[in-house]
Length: 104
Image (tube, rainbow, N blue to C red; front, side, top):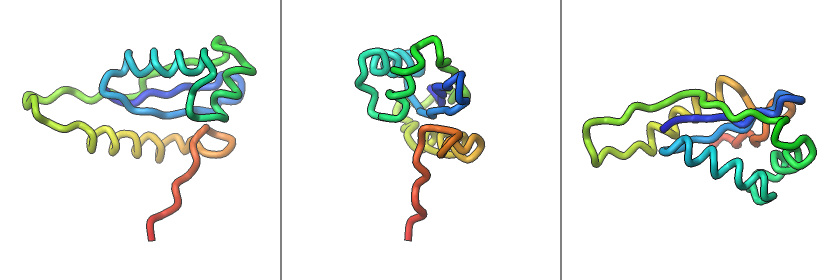
């Protein structure tokens, strides 16, 4: 469980995502990209152009499981994702994310 990135080796652009099951989510992301169905259209376009060998999938951070089987990890994953978005700033030429507008 944690945060991973999909990195374009040619441009250095990254896509950040979280998952409770990292191997499963990475596999799902690869499958979507290979089949042209990833929801991030810019990432999908670059993947189609560069091919799978032009990208790496890397785990950036992991969350440890708690002893409480009822613990909800959603907030922890969201916080971890925000930390990595702040750290890497994957917007514009650096990534595949669109900067969220501040809430009013």
